[in-house]
Amino acid sequence: MPELMLSVVQNIAVLAFSVLLLAYSSDYFTEGAARVARRLGVSRFIIGAVVIGFGTSSPELFSSVYASLMNAGGVALGNVVGSNIANIGLILGSAAFIRPALVRQKIEYINAAACLLLTALAALLILAGGVVSRTDGFLLLGVFAVYIYYSIKNPNNTVYARDTDEDSERAAVHLLLGLVGVLAGSILLVNSAVAVARGLGVPESVIGLTLVAFGTSVPELAVSIVAARKGYYTMVVGNVVGSNVFNILLVLGAAAVAAPIPADAAILYRSIPAVLFITGAMLLFMRTGWRVSRIEGAVLLLFYLGFLRLSFGAA
Image (cartoon, rainbow, N blue to C red; front, side, top):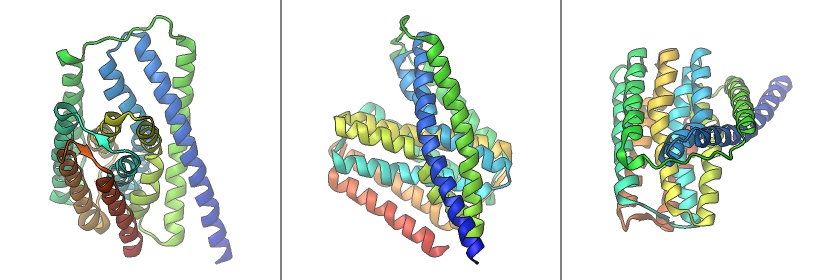
């Protein structure tokens, strides 16, 4: 028993280190990708919605795909669902509690409505067969490709940000170091999380829904809290909604293509209803005065804490 607890403590330490590695590496990756994009003259919208969106979602992507390949589907699916719950409950809730988050009606609200529909689509795919199949994965990736295509082709998003003063070599180094760090952090995170789950006798999906989801959501949390404190109101909502769309379409799609992902009872009967409920609540709160108030932020945050309590209590 002492040896078992020592192993669990060691794996928790590795898990904590992997979270820090992911946080710093994803920042390097995002910064490098944005610099390369600016150097190539990519539009500001694409830099914000696609390049930075991909960068902040890279921990979820690499961690979920790796977990799927390692036959730890519970961690992969739990990471996606748990990250979306954390993005709304923890990140948007905390940011709005610090300072109310304003909503641009024609952009964030429409995207949030689309996010709810995509969440419902993913829920139907999971509930239909109790598994996210490779066919489901290709379907989600196809929808993601359409989303990216229309984002690029949108005539309102053709403001370019070419910057010939960008240091191309430095940007490339940041991009490469960030990518290596995210890959290494993802491997450490998944392996240590699975080891902790097995050591404590907790289902892998619960670890994915909680610890792994929190760890991979650290970049979004940092970005949103800083944005809230600096008064970048609309950036908070856009960051959360964009990240959730990426998680549903790109992350879950890629992980399912890597290997079919079965869903256990924790996902089917607790987490799916929870993610649908909190996404709907976000949409409702955004509509009340076109902002998420401090009280509404507190409600989202309390819901997230209650979800964590329920997840560990049921395990």
